Amino acid sequence: MTSESLHAISGRRLFFKEVSIFRGARNAIFSLDDQQAAKGVVTHSRIGIGCKVRIIAYVVIPKTAPQCKVQSVSEPTMQSREETATNVLQETGAALIHAHDDGRIISGQGTISLELLEQAPHIDTIRVPISGGGLKSGVALAANSIKSGGRIVTLPETNTVADGLRAFLGVLSDSFRNNPAWKECNQIGIILSGGNETFEMRGKKQGMEVNKEKYAADLSSIKEARARISSFIHKTPLMTSESLDALSGRRLFFKCECFQKGGAFKFRGACNAIFSLDDQQAAKGVVTHSSGNHAAALALAAKLRGITSYIVIPKNAPQCKVQNVVRYGGQVIWSETTIKSREETATKVQQETGAALIHPYNDGRIISGQGTISLELLEQAPHIDTIIVPISGGGLISGVALAAKSINPAIRVLAAEPKGANDAAQSKAAGRIVTLPETNTVADGLRAFLGEFTWPIVRDLIDDVITVDDTEIIKAMRLCYEILKVAVEPSGAIGLAAVLSDSFRTNPAWKDCNQIGIILSGGNVDLEVLWNSFSK
Image 1 (cartoon, helix red, strand yellow):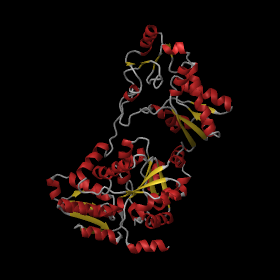
Image 2: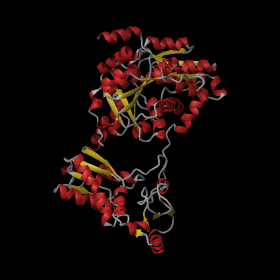
Image 3: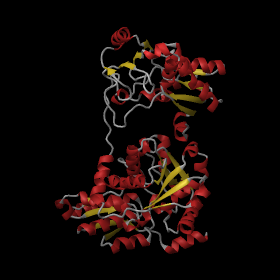
Image 4: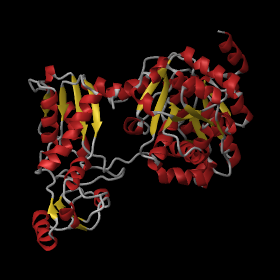
């Protein structure tokens, strides 16, 4: 695997090889003759090298081992490792297979180099995590035999809860950058040595106290949101098109949030936020600032609950979206076009009325509501391997990613963003929130910047950001209209634009993205704007 964002952070071309200790274990076990194998094998390890083979495996595991690794082996004995392993060996006659100090283990691990140098023959350096040395020894023996002059780099290990990421973190470390070899290491293969980590597992490992980071939402809050709003929202349809499949070279599944109440996905989050308020809070009303879809969604949700909504709208908001706010009974308060003006006006209204402020995206209730899209999508198309989602402030993609990756950790979630408002792409590359002095895109719903609650989710769970220009967005709008027979706004069409873009086709993830869910996020577009866009 590769990543343009991680290339930018490291200043080097990185090639990630994901591997498992199962290579060495399998080689060792299948090297046994039948008589030896019949008595079973014994080892002591933090993970079970005897799993998934049809002989008895006695695995001595320390009490500090991660629970997910214990669950992957049979009959774990939780006592002192070497003494217990010796006792088991004497009692059973099983063959002892050391976790790393064994030629069969080393040979099995060496197959990693054979694959890596076939997949990326041009690399000049391999970065290997080191513990007992079995992995490094096998990798080095094979790599140096095939390609003399290459570097096998191990450095003092970064203290981290993520065992499998040690090699990658080493590449980012000052100790590597200060190493004399740094200037010669340009094409680096990185061994990601393991993936046996539960999503929620945090704690003390190797003497380090870990502070849990809690996202603003999770799968539980998303399921609660679904129960709360299910009687108010539409379960939106999933559409397919053989014509668009042929055009893209992929199977595409369109989640039509343009058919949601209010004309956009925003109603899910707004409805969840409104109906999460207690009666005392709700009686004072709600206030928000929005360029359109969240404004209409909040006004509609407030109307359903019978409370007042104060909607701060910038003067340049699309007329059709303003009309939706008025239609749903929202009280419109105008602001200047800047984010600062919008926020200051909303704060003033809140102070004057006591209304509850509901942010368009930087709010856990909003994120949870938007996450219900993934629950529906993965029920309608459980086989998809990728979801492409528009990104702006990050509320939609945060909810989608949290739910989707909790249900299927292997699924990819890709963001689609206009090149004229590419703060999310820049933020991912920089590893921090980047804001732009101005934005310039036809997609008026994608001009906001990431918030303090959405950024950690985007940083951690979004696999990559695909940027497209306005011409590609307008082309995708036209295809939606002409082929799907669905009118979508520019922000809603950007997912299809991303799939059809050269940016996506040249992305390393392209070859593995075969069954793609695309969120058509909204359909609130002025017809005059629609026709004028098509005529350009």
